[in-house]
Length: 444
Image 1 (tube, rainbow, N blue to C red):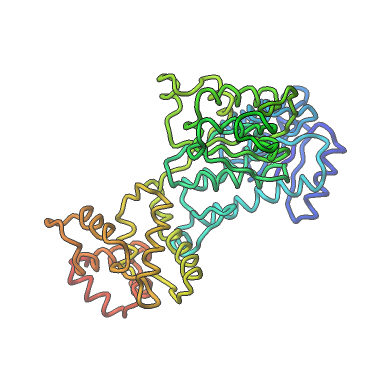
Image 2 (cartoon, rainbow, N blue to C red; image 1 turned 180 degrees about the vertical axis):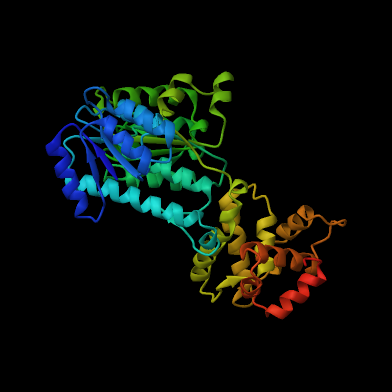
């Protein structure tokens, strides 16, 4: 790790604190010398002060990003603002810390980056990727697409005030929102609202509250979700379904950080981080007059996109095993694994319903299975049909055992890098039997 700061006392303090955590630190008071060292040694993490003579932190960041964008750069400044933090992150910074930095914060942020780096390297190692489930704040996946998302969450979580999550239905947008909340500075509640489930006439009352007698049926005072989420996070799921009249009032609340309950003459200050999520194209809705452009830009200061399951095929087996543990425990069943044939059927499906569809399919199989291992026949029937339609066979029938067996042998050989002993172990057959099947299917 490298630290660049023209304040020698600050350098010494941070170096001592991180040495206690077992982190090797190289310190430089001049950015040019620090950059030379970084070019030659490519450290995992660089911390640099923002305001320095000759070359400031933004210039240092730009130089580092130009020759190695994989380096995690943390900017430090005594002049913190959310806007400048987000702008620095857009330029490639991993984090943005407010001076004076507490030793606890320093150890926590650097430690998280080091752990995330080790996990990312481990996940992308082909010798481990197929056998180890990786979790990040409740999310399962070790595909490159998910590690990019994890990295972005780690970067923006301490700084965002408003944020937009985009992704198809069933991809896990609420899990992303919960991760952002958990990794943010706030320790108060995470308050979710599904905008598609709220009656249009009750939206304002749900968000901002009301006083007794404010409208017919208002028999008591009610605190709105904005106040309920004070010093915490308000999650607006499917924000594209919010009516235009409420969008205008939401914009005012975000701009002023205050709400006015229905029937009240007095506004109330709130301190709330707002995360919005949608599966809809809000930019197209703006063109159609269905969503306010000013609200969109207020919400989308930072945007995150959750990849669909079809783009993260490598995570299907990890997710399936995770869901199997969940459903087996819930149903009180002793089910420990899948047959290779069942896994192949799962991998052939396009999963238009994404992770939620996969979870439901494994729940179905956990009920239907008669033994400790789930086979293809335990899966929903439509998955078998889907597998037959995606295989390169002449007929549109369910794939034959021979077709599946050949693919399983090919898959095992790929995973083992053509090591026949390892491939036989994966298939749970003898090496002689593997060689027989390789000859049978013309693989030797």
